[in-house]
Length: 447
Image (cartoon, rainbow, N blue to C red; front, side, top):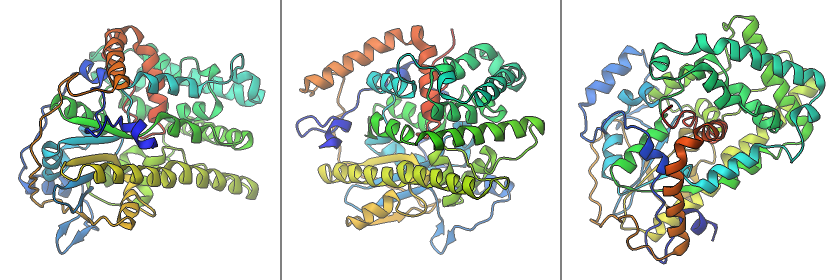
């Protein structure tokens, strides 16, 4: 089964993923808070944001935590892909407690695998011998070049004093994100352009929430895994036809040009600040968080004619189906297999919040399969009583030679990581824009 390739089930043993070699190279910024904090502290912070309590019920304030009712609970936590420091204090303590007491932590994609990284790199590139100038209309290519030159000039002023104090340099950062752009497929260039904004640049260098949780899982010697494969992320991005890709790139570039002309005052449809505010307030708004899940720019605007509106809607529907609904079905099927295989184990699944909100969610799919799932109020005390089990040590109880080979590859890759950091930055940053892991630029310390 495809799931067994994803989680490397080893002859009936717990599916074990290689410990992330990259994670060992990243300093852990804060010790994880396992104790349940005073519930009023988060509430007071939310009051300062002037939050609207739209999600209050008789049982309490809803949160981004859901629980599967079973003998040993399994949890789903909805994340967003922003620096964790922007949201951490607003996350209710019971979510942190559920994470700390769960034996097994699962994410969407395993970005620690060397195969994943190399596949993602190749996925972005045009066929051998082709350049972007060969496939784009000349006028569009020149506009793109001009915009990237503008970004390169502006980047030093966009960076923060804190970034400079940590040794991050504008030229290096620009090359890490936009290097080799003339060899990339137009769809990936579109995503790159959408991420080259002042707000996004200022956030580079701090792990986003997903990565921070992965770091903590590794630090706490938890078992970690993923429910998706790299090919399942790449193929949909390269599935648009050429007309759609040109339209998407042109519209994304046009939006950035408008922002330049307005000296950065033009407002995007949903900004990162909007996303953070809704998340910190606990607002379960599917429109907001589905946008974060797909990570594709909104192409609709008031200047479009009927044909262009139709084209934009086709693209939106394509990405909504491929990057949200189809993934929800696939992720739910693999979660079901995990839970069915290991009823006595405790799990914590951390996926983008958009996978749990709206229509045809991961939760909906699992409920249809007979699982009973409930939202956990923000201030409900969480008590887990997982079955004690020994943690696998490196190399112990692993009989599958494929897994052992992968583990050795991880360690080798870790030793050479600092020598190849720039290539990793480029690959992981672009992938982050689509698979909800905008975490990945500057994963490693700059030397």
